Length: 85
Image (cartoon, rainbow, N blue to C red; front, side, top):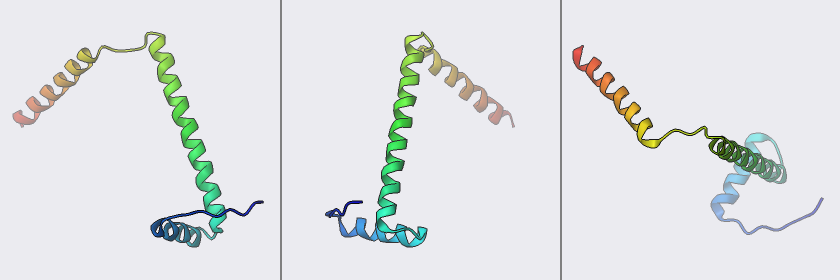
């Protein structure tokens, strides 16, 4: 284990102390959890983007104007139903 010194804003220090108090963990453990969560979120985002790129490269894409036309039709239908009530 290593000891490090951080320069944090007063607000960040207060948030860290609050998170530690609420969780019953040490401030160091809260920081470690935050780092792990950040890593997991970054990896999930990378996987999400890679999946989208692969789908696009495989041709699984839709034309923007066609999608917008479908959305407009759904909205128009919903407005007509609402007006008829």
